[in-house]
Length: 177
Image (tube, rainbow, N blue to C red):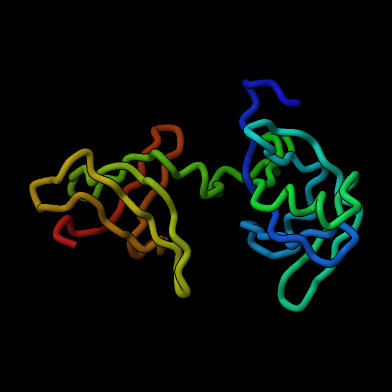
């Protein structure tokens, strides 16, 4: 179990069972599919509680990945874990250089354009085929009739500055869009 002060960082989730020996399909949110296996142990959330698990083995199965977890030896045991989130502690995460950040750090940041217009806060980052997009939600419909905006995360073109200390992102984006 983890202390309530530790905030787990969700890196993926357990999918359906694979085979009869308790293997599970893994959905990853890491840059590379296999990146989730760089972390050990994992925390999985079962019935609202986080618990540690150890990955015994993993392999590619086509374009997907499957894994065997300690204590999960049957298809029935694996099925009980389907859709459980996979996380690690913040302490397990790599410390990034000063000019880099994790996507999770952008959630909740105020988004202000270069003319000082506050567009709202980042609700989530949406992955698209070409570039990731900030979903920015206004506090209410603003003067431009917008309740939310989608701003491509393209540095130097639209994203001018990310200031995590002040939780603010400066963008070159017209409020009409």
